[in-house]
Structure formats: C-alpha cells, structure tokens
Length: 327
Image (cartoon, rainbow, N blue to C red; front, side, top):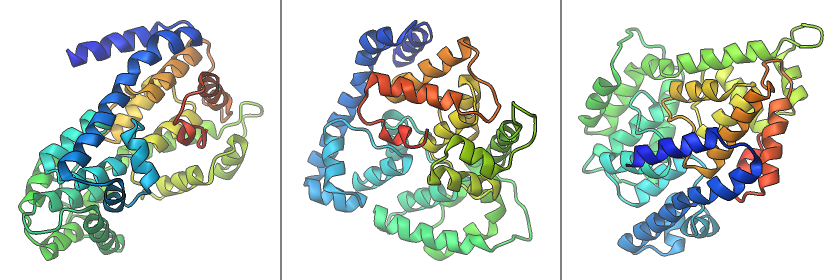
C-alpha cells in the first residue's frame, strides 16, 4: 500500500500544472511525514526517559535542535539520523529501518568507511554504542587510511564486506581490516566522482563563445557557496563522502534534469528524490516544469538554480534554508 501511495503522489506531482495546485492540493498531503517523525522522536525520548538536554548531549547538538525535531522538523543529514539512532540504542537492523523509513536514506553501506565503522560498533556486544565513541573511532580510522597504499587489491561484494566487519571483535582487528582494504573504500564512489566530473566538464564550456572556463570561473559565475566549492575540490580529489542535500544542490548547479539527479543519487547508494518529502517534492515539480519549458541546459549558467530558488521562495516553506543556502 505504501508503494502504491508513493506512486500515486509521484503521478500527481508530475502532472501538477502550476504552483497554486502544488501548494493547495499536494503539499498538505505530504505533512504526514512530519507528523510521523514528531511521533517517532517523542517515542525515542519516552522509551529511553531522555530529557531534551540529555538527547542533545548524546547527539552532540543544541537543545533547540531537539525541540525542533520533537515538533516535526526533520534532521537535514543522514549523519544526524545516525546520531539519533545511536541515542535510541538501535542495532544494525533497527538502524537500517530507521534510516530508510524516516530519513529516506539508504541502509548502512559496508564499502563506505563511515558506515563500516558504524556497522562494526553496532555489531559489538562490548563496545560503547554511542555517537561519541563512533566519532572518535572513525576519526582514528580515517587517519589510519589516509596514507595507506595497499599491496593487494581485494574485490569484495558489499555483502561479503559487511559479513567480515560484523565478525570483527576488537578495535585492533578492525584497524587492520581498514588498512588492508583502503583501496576498496576509496573505490566505493568512483562512478559517482566520474559522473559529477563529466557534468563539470560540460558546464565549463561557455554558451556565449564556446571557450572553456576554469572551475574557479564556473564557481564565480554561479556564485557557489564556500561549502559547495569545498565539495567540488574534494570530489576532484576523489575524497568526498556524499551528503544527500549537497548532492541534490550540486545536481541543480550542474544543470541536471530529474532523471540525471536520480541517477547520481543511485551512484551514491541513495534513494531517488522522494515524493513524500515536501522539499524534494517541490524540487521534483521545479525540475519537471523546467524540463518542459526547455530551461535545462548544461551551459554553466545559473538559470536552473535561480528558477528552483524562486519556486521555494514563492511557496514560503519553512525549513528550506539549507537548500537556499546552496543555490
């Protein structure tokens, strides 16, 4: 039934003719996600007997953030959902369901260093199941892998990689595993990096004189934020760990249509744009409307960015500042 409802919403969204219909007929239907999230947050805090301050300390956020979550405001990153999952004392199966059901994010991915450390901790019966411990261990593992060039390249499937990690019992063994599989972690997003760089190249060719711009000139022309510039630098160095909201904003900057942004999300092991998420539903509408009006062209211009931004501003939606900041 849930899949059916999602398909119905998607069909309605793609056939929506104007902003007024989007605002009055579709967006109200999507508020159910906020209601469900509000209930989930209160359930987590009630079952663990957390105060707002205790929850904030465990997630390493402000008390204000926790209050917003309890009022239905969704966390804006996958990592934040993982923090909350740790606070809720979830095991791997529960964490995966939590990420997929409430965050619309993919389950833990063993070929991602960040996720593999999370899998390792959640599989242990002796290690602290806290975000603080996860962060400290991850920082240590990232340092371990930074300068390692393994002698042997072993190609594991994602399932095989996860099975190995689940059976590791101590930090030292996990540390050796990370070092031995440094190449595997680095190759996890190769196709994603290549795909983004392909669109960077397309957008660097000026529509006016067909001359090739530098990345710096493209960034200046589109007025990229400092965080967006940092993402591109990391992608070109093949070091960046994809964040959903940054990927989506990047897709708009690089003049990708709906199909291409969804493909990019798939390469990042993420779900496609979700019609049940109000902000992503608006983006789906804007991208499809722009496509129908021939307003999407990989020419380095910021026409698509400006159009998407104008749609969000006209709808006067709450909680979309993180989107506007990157457009």
